[in-house]
Picture: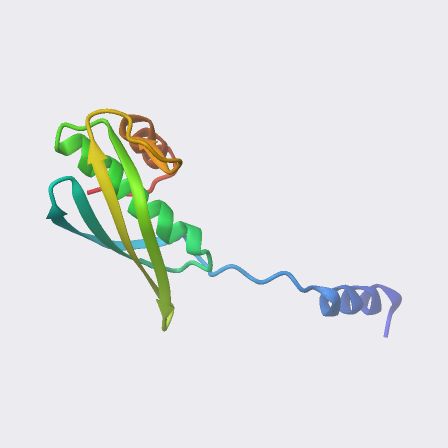
Length: 125
């Protein structure tokens, strides 16, 4: 075997970085349910990803756009559950929406968030 081929084979054997799925993340839908008052549930589906954060980001984008549609400027994440089965990731998130900045550390400015979602090509409701 020639030295260049041996070196390339040795480098390939050392690689431990996971390989990302081919193609872009696929956002497969948002289901929105008004629970009580200003409490809203968002169920999202994502495929072609290996990142839980893609699912959480999709739910956040949905919540931000929903807040704007309802005439509110802010949302606060109550909880987000993420699961994966057979390559399909699902998110079940609950947000409160409000006209003023709510208390808490997980608040979002809806306008800023929707603009960031558009920049990142993450769809909204």
